[in-house]
Length: 88
Image (cartoon, rainbow, N blue to C red):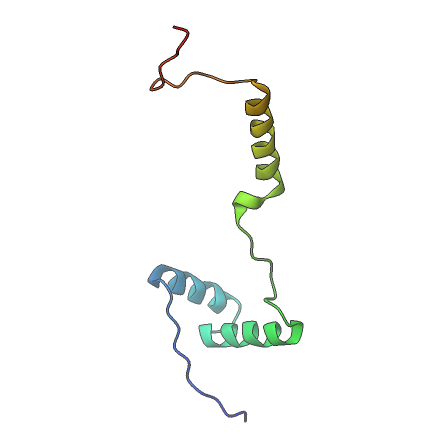
């Protein structure tokens, strides 16, 4: 048997409970799940899944680019109710 140690991690209570339920459905406990994560990370030399911020999704970036283009070209501009219109 491998020489094991105890490791303490902090999780939000809700995340821990949801993770325990999910991993239990897979037939494992939280400790086994984290062991699998650590082993896969070491085998692959990276985190074994994509980590992303939805802000940077292709769809969101395309929408942001479209809006920037609209603003720069003067299209679809509307007055903000808190900004006084100099021409009014």
